[in-house]
Each structure stands twice: as structure tokens, then as C-alpha cells.
Length: 182
Image (cartoon, rainbow, N blue to C red; front, side, top):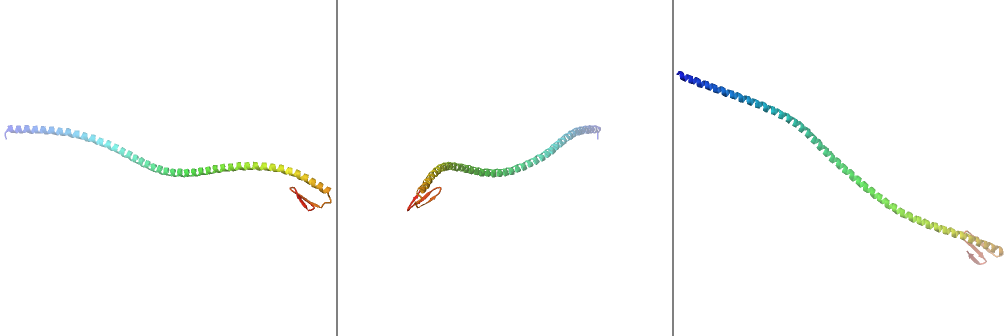
């Protein structure tokens, strides 16, 4: 092999070596860039995993809160149904009491009317009683006068057969065969 070819070969080998060295350096640079990108991406992944962990914890608590709220809503619904039942019973009770109160008010009005009638009746009876007392007093005076007259008649005519019966309300007297009632 001629020397010139050898030198050419060497030159081309050295150029090849230099080219390969340059390529290796370029690859090292790219590799370093890729390592840096991997480190950055790894860092981002870690940050995202931390955020995801935080999100999972937050999501767990939110789910827990949501379940608690759902339970509270159910309890409120049940409580509301119970309260509606109680309110319904109270409403029925109040309507019954209102009916009873109205019946009592009507009965009170009826009793007031009856009472007024009784008061008027009592007034009439008192007036009748006063009139009767006055009439009885007048009758007593009249009967007293008649008794006196009968006693006087019997004293003045003692031989006359007569029997007398005198009470507070009537006087009967028989003279001979005739009967006189006053």
C-alpha cells in the first residue's frame, strides 16, 4: 500500500475519528439535554403527583362531606316528613278545638238567650207575685171585714141555727136551709 494512500487513509480515519468524536460530543450534549429534560419532567411528575395526592385527599374529604350532606338531607327530609305529620295532627287538633269552641260559643249564646228569657220570666213572676200579694192583702182585709160581719150576725141572731167554717181563703155559712159561700 503506498504511503500516500496510507496517509489518506489516516487522514480520513482521523477525520472519521474527529467526526465520530464530534458526533459523540453532540450525542453527549443531547444526552445531557435529555437527562435535564428527564429531570425536569421527573420534577414535574413529582409535583403533579403531589398535586394529585392533594387532590385525592381533597377529593376524599369532598366525597366524605358530600356523603355527610346527603345523609343530612335525608335526615332533614325525614324530619320534614315527621314535622309535616306533626303539623297535620296539630292542624286537625286545632280544627277540632275550633269546632268545639264554636259549639261552646253557640251554646253560650243559647244560654244567654235562655237566661234573658228566664230573667224576663222572673220579672213577670215577680210582678205577678207582687200583684198576688196586693190581692191577698186586699182579700185579707175583705175576709176580715166579712168575718167581723159574720161574727156580728151570729151575735145579733144567736137563736138562728147556723154553723160557720172560716179559713184564710173562704168562708162558708149555713143559715137554716140556705148555704152561703163567700
